[in-house]
Image 1: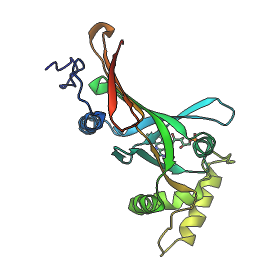
Image 2: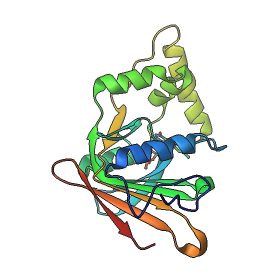
Image 3: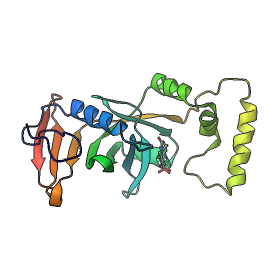
Image 4: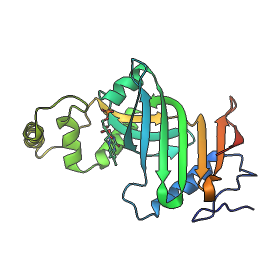
Length: 208
Ligand SMILES: Cc1cc2nc3c(=O)[nH]c(=O)nc-3n(C[C@H](O)[C@H](O)[C@H](O)COP(=O)(O)O)c2cc1C
């Protein structure tokens, strides 16, 4: 089996496995061993209602055959974009492994139960700040932000901070998933998996 030329053994790009899900899980597990603070950081690209693309980093918080999950404020710019056009692209770049993964798919809301479960695990200040920040809206200055946070901290003192109704998860389905492994002299390896109607994938090797 070819191991690629990356810093750790890679996939066999000439005879790729039929299922990309375990491949992602392995690459993600390897990324988690890196001396880097946010190996689960991914760029999330969406389409604004006027048709223009926009992108920002969010953290991967759950991955399965059903999709890649992240959490955010659903009233934010990205939330409004996804309400108008429920399609997204995700991008991971693990520089120390010379690897990139691209995911494209349709976006659905995580269930209330999933969002509640994840919200409840967050540190109390993060839960309060989910109420304090009108994500993506203008704010006069830092002082105004801190005033709102202090007000809400006092309001929630000695009681559970509930999940704001506008805060929750999204899941991007794995319609297309591409693995890229860097190699010498730009002769990189790429394999793109496309999901078929029956849930299986076709794998296509691409020129770098
Ligand atoms: C490392 C890192 C992780 C982030 N994780 C999240 C996240 O999980 N959810 C989130 O809403 N914003 C996260 N952000 C902030 C977003 O990049 C972005 O600024 C914010 O969500 C507002 O984006 P929007 O105005 O396009 O909706 C993160 C930023 C960085 C740099």
